[in-house]
Structure formats: structure tokens, C-alpha cells
Image (cartoon, rainbow, N blue to C red):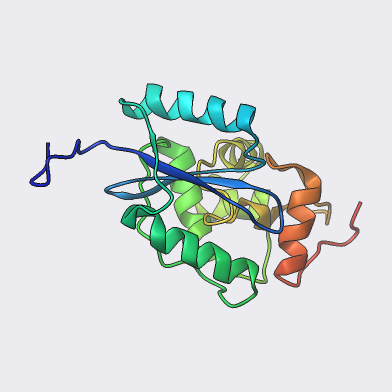
Amino acid sequence: MDSHGQDEQRVVWAVVGTEIGPLMLAATRDGLVNVVFHASDAVRDRALERLAARLGGKPVEDPGSPLLAEPIRQLRAYFAGERHAFDLSLDWSLISGFNRQVLRTLASGVPYGTVVGYGDLAGRVGQPGGAQAVGAAMGANPLPVVVPCHRVVESGGGIGGFGGGLETKRKLLALEGVLPEPLF
């Protein structure tokens, strides 16, 4: 328990409507811990079960939580075209090892309005030839949009894969003013 009588691992969550559909945001005292695409009831319930299993305790719906206020504000500004970089505390506890290294490099080194190839990103983390491993890291990203895995594309110009669906990836890249060529 902390000085306020709250469990230190408390996870709060809310669903926020966006131009790409509902996103579920979850946060701990350490920061934003999870962003989930297409947060229908079933998707949300599975995500909450995973969070409870990984972080302990039952996540609490609390859209007014101070832990979620800034992530919600910044995501709304991003989708309104008013924010090009996130300045949020992130809780990286759902990802580790190589995947965490790749995602941190992505978050700090691939700015709004740009894209990077899977192979290029692998080279940036010291694993030339590790494009498939980078793809796996993108698929394991617990913080999409904020940690911009949508900015990672095939080096030959294809859009590549995306856990949120290719249409969502296209919308995010269009929002940022860059779509890879060829589009399909």
C-alpha cells in the first residue's frame, strides 16, 4: 500500500473514442501501460484478463483517474492533428528484452511524419538481418500509437503488417501525412 492507502500495482483503465475506433487505455502509477485497438466489450474483457494476469489485481475502470488524464488529453490532441510527439510516462512492464529495446528505439528515433523499414530498425538496435525479430517486437507492442509501430514498414515500400489491422495503419499514416508507396 502507498501513503494514500492504494495498491501500488493498481491498474486503471478507460475506453476512449478516436478516429480509428475505440481505444482502451490502461495505466499504473508508473505510467501508461497498455493501449488496445478496437476495444469492443469482448476485446476489452480479454485485455483486462491479460492485464490482471500479468500485473496482479483486477484493473479498475476509472476514466476520471489522474493516471489517465494526460494520456487521454495527448491522444485526443494527436488525433486532432495538434500533437506530433507524446510526452508521457510509460510503464514498460509488459515487455522486456529485445522487444523492449526495439520499442524504445522506435519511440525515441522515428518521429511523426516519418517511417522506417523493419530491417533498418533492426540495424539501429545492433541486429542487422533481424527484420523478422523486429516484426515480432512490433506485434508485441503493448503501447501502439504512443510507441508508433505503425511507422514501421517494409523496406521495399509495402505497408507491412499491423496488429490493429492494415486499415488502421493506413489511417494513422495518413493522419501523419505519410503513406508508403506502393500503398498495396
